[in-house]
Length: 93
Image (cartoon, rainbow, N blue to C red; front, side):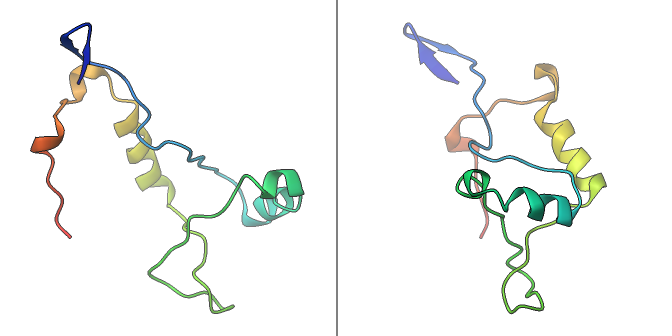
């Protein structure tokens, strides 16, 4: 919700600004990242719960079924989505 002309209005905003998800083989993505123009714009989101063979966190891989659920949630029609204001959102850490 946002105030527009003094009235509260529903507005659509990107949920995950600046993120691009790819569905590809690791080798295909690695090949694309060899291009310096692409590499300067792209980085992996790392899986901070595991360590790869090189001693670093590997790129995060989201399996197809959870990713499809995520896409469905983000593209839901407005009648499927309940709009809440920030004071009603609470996170547990």
